[in-house]
Length: 238
Ligand code: URA
Image (cartoon, rainbow, N blue to C red; front, side, top):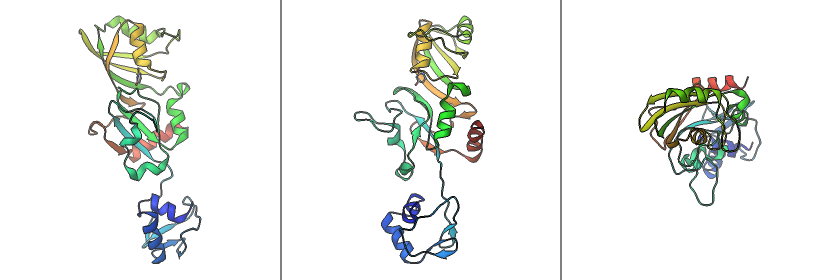
């Protein structure tokens, strides 16, 4: 990677500002002052310093978003706003992609990363990483529905869902539930309730495996994952 590009991505200013730093002999690579911006370096192997401070270059980045409604889980769209519109400019060069899709009207935990392997692991049904949703349901959700979801229900396209765990928080004309599923079929939660003649009125994802939506994150806000969250996600790759 070009030195000026790397420093710019690492937050040392625009390419022009970075070129100035280099010209002013403020940048060194492997303890040698560098005066050319266009040299190529390997940030994984080489020590890069600006004014004797080590440059913290991250290959992968993991961002937690509390997704608001009206945003698509996509990177670009001709008509709608996408979740990338909620990501600060300084992270945009990372080639981020959402991990799995939430519907336009679904809220809650959405991870964005440039770590393709992790993206695959978290979304692959074979890995059985349970995603938990909170939902408001039109109709009275009852004990009998717990068994039904556990056994699997038949969706409108004939697909039989895998074991899912339903927790009834409030059973009323508008019920409140938690549902954990290990798959991510299109509109899966909504279609599972459709299969038992009920309708999802509100849907929010609250966790993926042991990674939970940060309660301090307001809707539309992002934060970087912390060390222990990243360690947990890395452990899923093994
Ligand atoms: N299931 C749905 O129906 N919608 C989502 O956004 C996620 C899961």
